Amino acid sequence: MTSVLPASCASDPMTPGSILKWKNIQRIPPRDKLIFQQDNACPHTAKVTKEYLEEVKLNVLPWPAMSPDLNPIEHVWQQLKKWLYQQRYTINNKAQLIAAINRFWATFPKESVQALMKSMPRRLQAVRVAKEGHTKY
Image 1 (cartoon, rainbow, N blue to C red):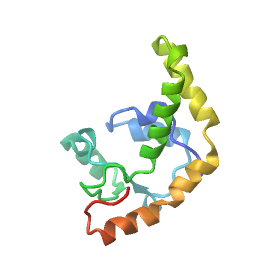
Image 2 (image 1 turned 90 degrees about the vertical axis):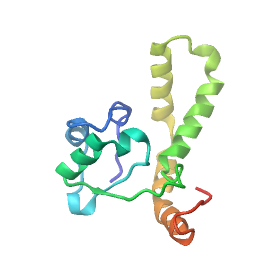
Image 3 (image 1 turned 60 degrees about the vertical axis):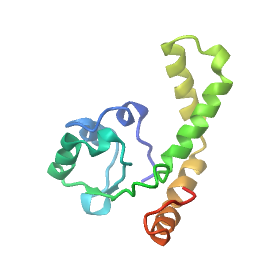
């Protein structure tokens, strides 16, 4: 799948309807081919989240506790933060911040997203080798 999850969906808590909102926007592969990934942040491990993911029967990738930055999106967030820091003198309110984030997403290279996605097997192999301990990710 080459589409990207919209920021408005990514910022929603994992509650009933948030995945459905994404589904209405994107073409989601069949559930048996979809692997949902999220780190162990409290909203992701909350009882309501776990119950909802079980209810909608999503295949959730187990996430090792020692690899909070394993998810490739963490590297995108790092680049976004760096870019926003460079823009700090032009951002004075929430509307300008939202506009700046939208500019970042509009110009973020699709090739970078694809490279990060393709790095997942390598990242998971590093976790296996480290027996779920620390990795460079």
